[in-house]
Length: 86
Image: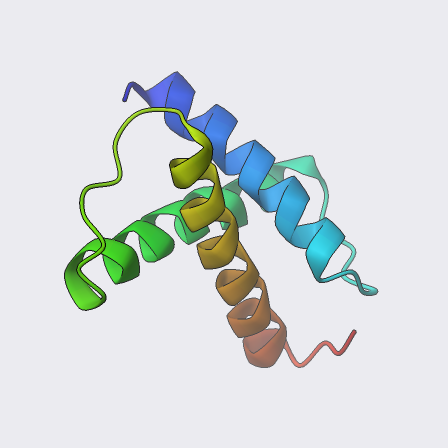
C-alpha cells in the first residue's frame, strides 16, 4: 500500500476507534490520524506476528478491522500515558 492509502486507512481506523471508544479526548483530525496509523501498524503486527492470522495487505475490510482494533488499543495506551479518562 502506498503512503496515501496508509494515511486514509489510518484516518478511517482512527475515526472508527474514536466512535468505539468515545471520551473527552480533545484530539483533532491530525492526532486521530496519527493514532490510527500507529494503531494500523500495531494491529497489523499483532495480527500477523503474534496471532498468526495471515498477511494484512491491501485496502479491504480485514485490514480496516485489524487497523481499527489496533487504533482502539493505541487510544487506550494514549489515554493511560496522558492520564486522561473517558
